[in-house]
Amino acid sequence: MMGWTILNVRLLIVPSQRFFTNQILTYLQNFSLVILPLFLEPPQIEGPLVSVQVSFFNRGGLAIGIWLSHKVLDGASLTTFIKSWAAICRRDPGHLFSPDLNVASSLFPPLQFPLEVVKLPYQNRNVIKRTFVFHSSKIAELKAKAASERVSPPSRVEAVMALIWKCAVTASRSNTRTFKPFALYQPVNLRKRIISENSMGNLFRMLVAQIGDEEIQLPILVDQLKTKLREATKLFEEKIQGDEASSSIFGFHKEVGELHLKGDDIDVYFFASWCKFPLCEVDFGWGKPCWVSIPLGAVKNCVVLLDTEEGEGIEAWVTLREEDMALFEHDQELLKFASVSCSPLA
Image 1 (cartoon, helix red, strand yellow):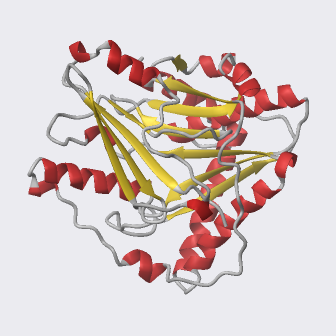
Image 2 (cartoon, rainbow, N blue to C red):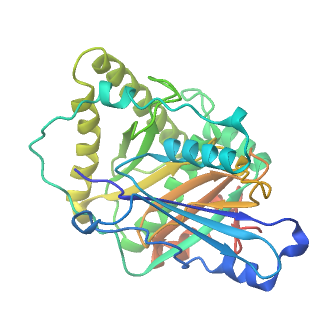
């Protein structure tokens, strides 16, 4: 069994563009800044389930850092928690959320599994982080390129995921001079497909897609993502009708753990989409944030996608090995659709 142990969100709230002082810009550009601990080895996790730090800037504006144990909530539940917290601060009872705390325990009762914890390398040396912005017009072009007679037009998230996956694997293969298999895993929210949006807890399962040692093409990767999502959803819908929902979820996570146990025989990439989570709409009473981030630790082959401020573009936070990033960030296919953002607000 394996998984992330911490959820971490940063919200930057600035009254207007004229308040962008050197202090704020320095804060934004310091990608290695750790407001609160990001990743801890599972046996060492202690302390509060939730921690919050608020940083005030000299001439106005503030940043809110939120650290929460993944034992309690997933990304969707964390978003709901933040929205309700903000509504309380605004004294706005009309936007308070009524959580459903029962569905998770009823669908997934505690079970005893004979499993061994898979310790992942949460911290890797020589890892580089970069942010790439995909504007909505470029995403439309990318979606058209990723479609084919066999593959229906992908969603914007599927299109961006496939392109980043393709370019990252190309960089890795160029550096290692091998054509080893590669895989992607991504948490998929169960609420939209199976259960109520009001459900709280960890209600997701892993989507796992793998490709062999063949040449990679964008439509093939999109087809893999769509096929695996369709197959996994169908399987889970069948299991949830009986008493096998928990074992089904465990099976998806076990598959991810087995991938990591293969070591250097396969390239494994983790993707998480926070798109459509309305964190940009959160208002504590000071106005909506001008920037939202999901800080990443020094973990290689990790990608987090968020909505841009206008809502239709995508901001991708990417961590790769230093030698892979050197090729990835100059990949002409990637740069045709994305721009490298040196500052989160660029």
